[in-house]
Image (cartoon, rainbow, N blue to C red; front, side, top):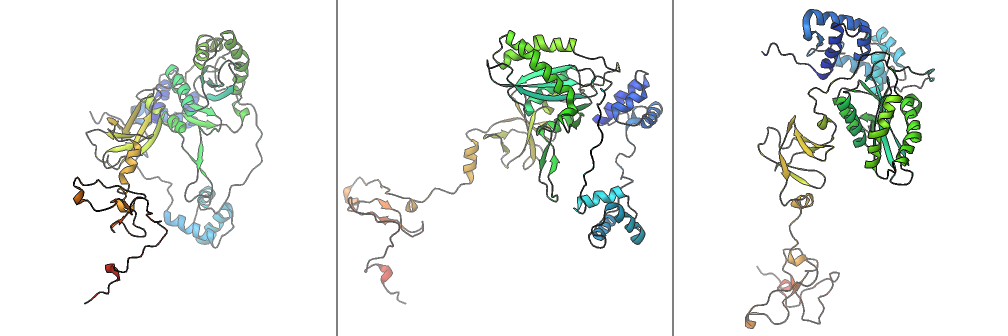
Length: 467
């Protein structure tokens, strides 16, 4: 049975699904090459391998092997040293020519350019903008969706200002819309989840460069900030959806024109329905506007095929959650949002001191995942996050170091009590190991911590030590 089992990635399963329709004669090779991002020649070769070898033919034959084009690290080090010294100030093209002529180091210009960029020896140069023209629609439904949000006074003063978050298909203009309090990661994940549950996973996602979709951070070794993953980009990456970021509002004109229609017709529908809350506005969307738009305003796609892919075994609720990484303490607890949580038995290998993922899901629930397994947990009893911070605090201050008067419980027998007050005050200028000084009777002064204390003339300290 183990020999008959084929291990595939999600990407390979998606390719196999598209090519399966090609083998069945339900999809052309040209259309398949566009959907899986390969050339027509590669599709023909893949078609032949699947026909001769079966499903295993979709697996890349270099899996697990060293790359044939991997450069020698010593060769890279030698080239960088020469570019810093002998060929300082040379461009990648000229430096590659001189390295080949004088040192016999044959490198492509692009490889040397990437090395020089990584080492800070070369900077990208600006080029003249290319001529742009209107992009035609994608042929298949689900091949690309455009997404955006519009913050507007949708309720015309009858309620709060809302953000309308929407997805529109590039081929058909079919939409999924939802009102949210603001344009957030949760809002986009909610709308994407609704689209996937209704139609499936689209091939690509086209949106602007909002901080929800991309972020930059300073990385050691780089002068410029580098792009890092966001919660949303991580989610669509796990779903196998390509993220395309537009450089201008005009590039995603289809969704921008959608807002023009909504701010005209939808506002009037909300006025006629007398909507005053977000819940009422969403009900108007579901019952009236979205159905009307998807009947009257859609276009017929060039191809009859649907490019959406099924969810399969993907955990959609887990992927479309806000995930945070936490380190497990020695007592198998983690801290999250001012609360300490106890991880329950059994303990897994590597769990203590390891990292877990905390998932904040859309339904308000929370899950903790460790190496693909969900862990049982509960709030730590009698231990809030503030109390946990106090565990490493210093012990209480000794009585001799406290400020002000500290009364002492008097003895039951007056004969056992010393005359006068037996309260104590801080020992000025002395450590906590030194006994505290007696406080004078009521009405007297305990002195000030700024005044130096000197022993009386008959004090043992003033006596000369004898051998």
